[in-house]
Length: 539
Ligand code: DGJ
Image (cartoon, rainbow, N blue to C red; front, side):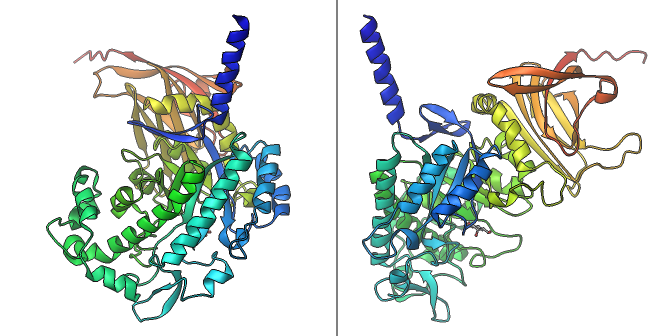
């Protein structure tokens, strides 16, 4: 009896160990499941030239491991693993996996194959030099570009083959330990230049009818259309211009990239079914299609990707522009899982709170994380992403549990925000934040503040953040009561247990009125609120 129990327990362990990481989607968003449990990626992406040798792993990964990062996003370049056609060299990738294991880090591989930031600079020389076999996209002026055309059959075949070899190799080396969690297929694809690819093959295709299958699939999903696609889509048309109007060039490119990537990704997934995603270079303010990679997986025409590339598990924004909230919110749609593979390192300590708390992201990852080594932040006054990750890693089990029930919120505030206050609602309360100020002079102590709020019970909230002063109100949509502070404690969490560091009151809560966070450190608080009936007297 006992022996059978032990055997079946062992059996369970073996089954669990072999379960490949996967994305689980629900109405609340998406989570990454690793070894059967939700996993919060506290990520960092390496700079483009930081993972090209084995020795870089030895110097870089131990430094990153000290930053409370748990997952490193690393480029793997086609030119590196198939410098000679048909001969695959995974020695550098293997060394990175070995060192990551020693440092207790996970990896996400970024496949720099046919396209990286729109261009094809990571293709091996034998691909770059043979423009007949691997045709280029052509500009409006008739020039061959440094961009492989999506319509090169040999390009798709060769890219698909090397990507499938890579995934096969990772499966063979890593499926038991699962150091590698996911793969990004290509990097920020899209056509750079006016209009679209003008190669003969592309012109021919553009002049023929939009594939009826694409129109039919889109027609059946009009409920999920972005406003931009809705404004342009005319199912009654035949040509690309008739069906997509002014957006025809961009949608044409989106469809071509989507089907090419689907062919590459599907070959890789057949070998090892890790979650696969695409990242997107978003338009800088005022940029037009072609200035940003046109036809990339950006939110306007993303539905074209979703119906064309079923192998792709989710779509991700790379975030470098000031309107972080706007862009990440556009990736928070039904059926997607929010993950930010690239974000500006300088703003990351603040934006991370919004990503995990408000957008329900399962991961966030500042770009060129290795540049943080030893430094505070660019201005010399923290917090850094290291400070934020230190706190968030202690809270990750709490965050993951409450993300699922829509029990988290996040908020960002900048000195140049249009309003001096920002408010979020959670449970029966409103949380109104302003940037922290000195007392009594009331001079601003910081230009930026951010927080994440987790509701742990009806009146109890954990708040982690920096640089904000928070006032609490009863949500008038709930009832007419007044919301007040019962208690505020500064707390910490270690191995799943809470400890109280300080009970805050008096000057430290503005005499029981507010939560006051320091400007340059990240702190965690347990705030208990209560509601009392509003009694209007003496009228
Ligand atoms: C976005 C790209 O995806 C990255 O590889 C890198 O080039 C950054 N832009 C810019 O540093």
